[in-house]
Image (cartoon, rainbow, N blue to C red; front, side):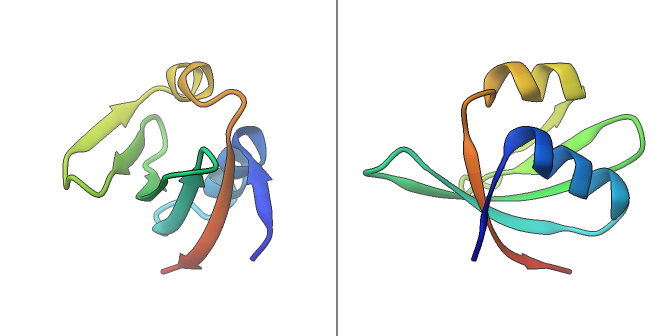
Length: 75
């Protein structure tokens, strides 16, 4: 799978509104899976702990600015 930047991921989410992206983020040692979808105004992010976080795009970018994501699947 290809890795995409946080900006690229947001663009893909916007183009595929309502579709759930299963993505992984890695810091080199740990890998965490997220289920993310774009609801139109809010980005919904459920992590491996099953807690859903509602992000504004600006907040998500600020939190994951330097991150790269591996897209596992889109449903």
